[in-house]
Length: 479
Image (cartoon, rainbow, N blue to C red; front, side, top):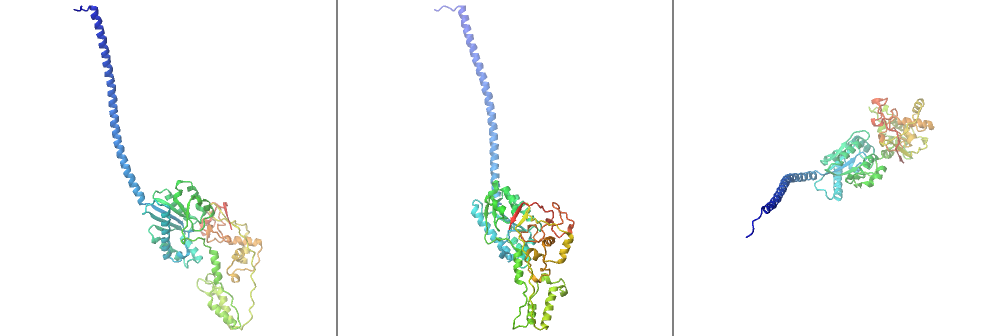
């Protein structure tokens, strides 16, 4: 039998048990503390998970809504896609054969233009939907264009151009030929604004720009040349590209629609000279078989003098010196016996002045120097009644039958004064005139640079665009 433990043994044993209990309690407390920490982390993660789940569901709903909206927007963009054709009708002029047909020619021109644009788009824009539209805007000074074509003999009456425009506009719902009225750069300004308006329009997939005749568009095209949208622009050529446009056209797509637009500018002076030479009267020729009086009578009956120079407003022949001279010649010749008719002396021809260039400012307006003059000398030269066209252009169509003198022999000072006198008459082509031999005025000689004010006010014969012209020359066109 084991001996009973002593008190010391029991005390030592108790101390061991107490240490073990203390270690157990510490372990339990540590485990409880860790449990509390893990519980808090769990609750936090649970909240985070709930929040993420909520946001994920919200984002999924928003993504789904945005995808639906995107599909709707794509459908809207595709549905309203169009190609814009902008044409400056003052220089991009349709072919003569189309214009002279009037309304029928306008319809044909619209149809040919629509077909040419469709074929071009089909070859260049393969991804474009088939239901795109072609929107065409032609801007021009209709009155000026009508008169120009009439003077050039393209149409027999200015009304033909109005009929052409009516046919062009009425043939297609999205084709418009717009009359901008008279004034410098009106068509240019409208075209530039329309160009800028649609350049970043998502519905406008391409712009076909007809402007090859006008250097004024070079500034606009230079600004766009470095932008990503440059691939959405095609330059349409009618007449050959002007120098500044030719320098930048390599940065753009270019095309040309055959048998639709004129490839050369209209030359009114050349046509007017040719037609008047063909209709100019020739003096009667004598022959042994026909008496002189009969020949003169038959010539007087068959020939009608030019209306612009011989017909008075009230039809009174007393106001018509040429018609009176022809009638008196015929009546006296029929009663007189045949006589030998002496040939009239030849008209002295002045030495042609060589014009080598046309100066223009930054707006493309023509600048002709206004010479110094003496007022008394100008009045004296005007009294001589020299023919401006004969002495300054050397191509008077009336020759020896001109109402103004061709026989006077002016000196250099008188020619300079005569040139100033001629500049007092405004040129019908305004500041855009490109005839190097033009003798008429392209800016008001009484006006001041930089201001539209004029001492003649509303009575001035020069148009508003011919006042305040910038006289700083920035380019010279060699002839």
